[in-house]
Length: 204
Image 1 (cartoon, rainbow, N blue to C red):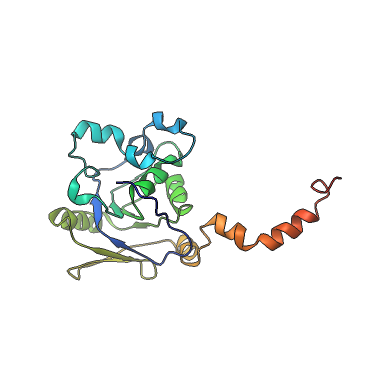
Image 2: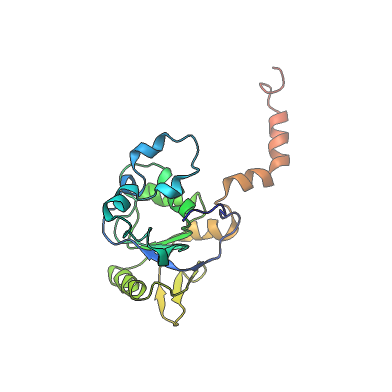
């Protein structure tokens, strides 16, 4: 599923259903194969996310299953997003509809690229993630609520999983500072004054 509704401004919570992608060391080439990197814009990447894995599973991949369409939370295992630093990977996930990730660990550059899109990446222990994945697979339709303030996830049955979210990213997401474009627009006057004072912009 693709979506044109992208997050902007402060992020305090993410609500919705979840999709599970199990396995360690899922790299960015699996998330979005290299042949899609030559695109001029990121438009349409949501349709190609996990393209090769989905082709192999002939419609049985979690991102193709009808009951999981519209999911906004992705639950993964260790070292998700490793490999090349392509920003296309979180772009493809976002354009499919993912608004938050929960996993055991994330590759550093992938984590940063998600933060730049306003997508929080929560972490939890191996046991906690396995418990969450098992609960989600048993009931694909349960609604989840992720809180950035408490770094916790609660399902519609009242089960609670305590997660972790680094304080720096949490503050950036909660304040909206992750959104570089909005930060530039909010400081337009100061930017204009600085530009006017630069001699190489004013015919020096």
